[in-house]
Amino acid sequence: MDSAMWFGIFAGVWGIAMVIVFILAIRLSYRIEARSEGLTNRSGIPRKAMIFHTVFNLKVARDAETQAMRRRMLSLLAVIAAGFIVLAVAIRLFGPG
Image 1 (cartoon, rainbow, N blue to C red):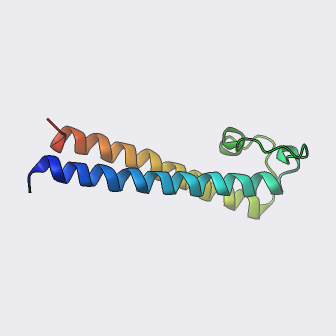
Image 2: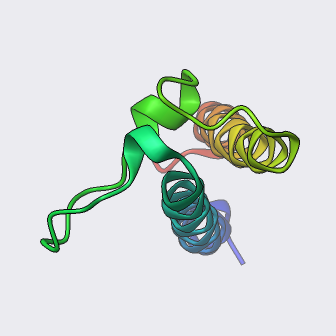
């Protein structure tokens, strides 16, 4: 098999993995919002995840369990950043073309 095909397989698996990790981070962000008084959605209308607030600890509950959840979310976002670095290296070394 040539390198272009392997790169295509790698890029597909990478993309699926990054989407899964991002969905996990969003779900965790919603759980953090539910535990935080300042971020609770009381309107009854669905809204976007407040990831910016949870990343920068704005209006997030200060209890130990919520902060542990926040650290877990930060680690998931770090995995996504590392994934993009891995993809950039793979493109540089084995990229199509």
